Amino acid sequence: MVEIKNLNGDSILSVEVDTLEGANLRGADFKGADLTGANLEGANLEGAELEGANLKGADLQGANLKDANLQGANLQGAYLYKANLEGANLQGANLQGAHLFRAYLQGTNLKGAGLEGANLKYANLQGAYLYKAKLNGADITGANLTGTILD
Image 1 (cartoon, rainbow, N blue to C red):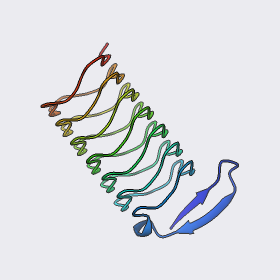
Image 2: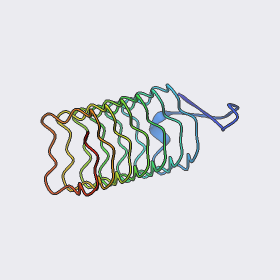
Image 3: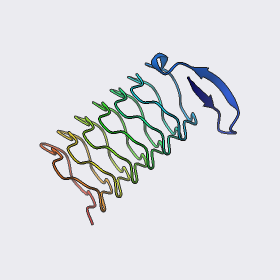
Image 4: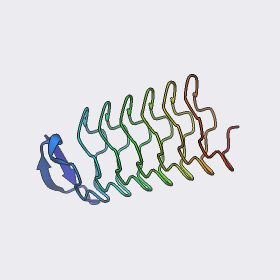
């Protein structure tokens, strides 16, 4: 069960995590929520608050996470194929083994993020901030690294 709050912190809806495919959750507050294995495929999470949320193994394929705050979130093994993370804050997030194939990460803050073993094939990392990001074993084949800041 996930409780969705508006920007004022008021509870607006409680839902089962497996019912969020394609949901419009723009600006929703999931701070610290346990969304392990949740199906959020195609969901609109633009500007959502997901700081410290557990999204381990979650399906976020094609999801819109533009300008979302995922600082310190656990996205280990999450499926983010073609997800839009433009301008998102992923500082200190755990993305170990995450599937970011063809993901849009333009201008994303990945400072100190754990990307060990992540699949970043053909991802767009243009202008992304990767200072102190851990990239051991990450596959960046064909990724757009134009203007990426590494140090």
